[in-house]
Every structure is written in C-alpha cells, then in structure tokens.
Length: 295
View 1 (tube, rainbow, N blue to C red):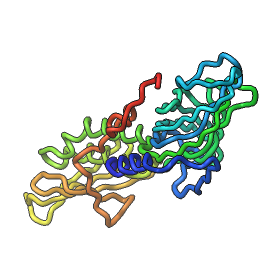
View 2: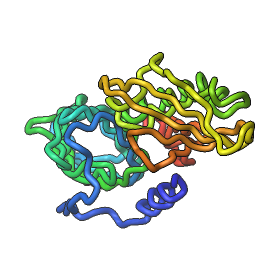
View 3: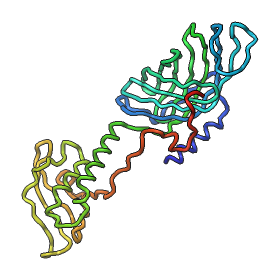
View 4: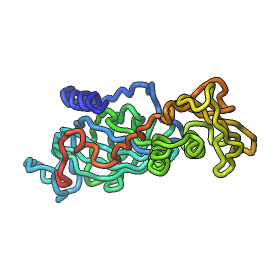
C-alpha cells in the first residue's frame, strides 16, 4: 500500500504548477465529523511573494531595483504537510523547498473544507483537506510585510486514526498477555477463559465476555478421548446477559469459537497480532526527501 502512495506522491511532482485559480474536487472519501487523528501529505506548491515594507528580508538573493521592495519573487517546489484533526479543530505543520518557510497552522474545517491560519504571518490557507488530499490556496492578510499568493496540491500518503490505533494497541497487548495460552498447548478446558478474553476484542463491547464469569465448563466429543473435541462453557456478558461458548480443538490446537452472540458461526482468530504502523517520520520511511527547516 505504501508503495502505491509513494508512486502517487512522486508523480504529483511532475504536474505543472497549478494556475492561480484553484479548482478543488469533491472528496469521495472524506473524514468523519468526529475524526480524531492525523493525515500526512506530499505534493508541490507554486506562487509568488512580494515584500511591501522596505527592509523586509527577502526569501532569496534576487535583487529588486525598487527601493520599496515591490518586485515579486516566484517560489515553488516540493511541499510536505501534516494536519491533525480533532473534530472540526485542525492543527498542522508544513515545510517545503523553493523559498517556502516552515511554519504551523491552526483553524477549523467544515466537512472536507478547511480554513487555516499560519501562526507565523497570519496568512490564510483555504481549500480541501481530507484523507485523500490537501489542495488549496494561500493569501496574506492585508498590510502584512510580505504578501503571499500561492497554490498547493498534495495527496494524502498516510492516515492515522488515533481511536483505531489505541484499539489496535490494546489488541496487541491482549495478544502478548493471552496469545501463549490461546494458541499454545494444553487441555482446552483450561484455555477457554483466555480464548473468550481475546475473542472479546472482535465483538460489540457490550456483548463481550465479562472476565471471571466462566462456569459449567465441560469437554464434548463424539468419541471418548478423541483428539477432535470442543469445550463448552457458560458466562456473563458485559451487558449482564447470560451467554454460552463452544471452542473447537484438534489435537489440542485451538481452531475456532462459536458463541450465542453468533450462533452457527465458528469464529477463527488470527494467531498473529495486528501490525502497528509508525506515526512519525512517515516521509523518511517512504523514502521521500526530508526538507531542512531553513529551506
């Protein structure tokens, strides 16, 4: 998946600088209104900077014959941004090449549309912001010593859902605690409790197993001492309802578990815990160029 993101990200650098008028496409895969997480983007930017106050430091060594510094400087290059969403509140940071200074952003979003303010110079960033893209334009506030007009276009290369990530971390910790019992050796009767604990992460929380309530455990098989057998037990769910479970074993290897929550369906559990992807240094991990803070 990341190789696909990388291909898309690098391809966008080959796109000619966008025109001054930005057309923001409709989002097909927007973020939920209550999304709590972050999206990292990679793409390009182009535009111009004009110093309106004499003595304002210039971004490049370009000489301007006007003493008042009214000559526009063209800027453009690669662009990296990270936006963190907390419902409609958006905070972010960005950096780029070709005359773009790194800074941070803060503002709000309505659906897939963001209106953000640069914390360094107050310039207004507006456009589309969702898991697929961050596309829009930047304009300075009136009377700013530097007047900026630029457009940017990026694709989302990584999305981190903080809630889902925390759920995945909890599941990994459960595998560490219970996996050796669930997928190990030994009589199934002594493992049903651990199996129910791990299975709870895959069902509605209210219907999950309430720890310590397992009772009336018995081994069941068509033939006495058969290596293919099931272990039946009754328990109480977290919502207070009574329930039953039946785990299937073959030669003491756990196969699947059926419960009264899903009667007739024997759920298998992957013996491998989910992979937790890194949340930081995504650009480095993708092999994308890292922009120095002073660029």
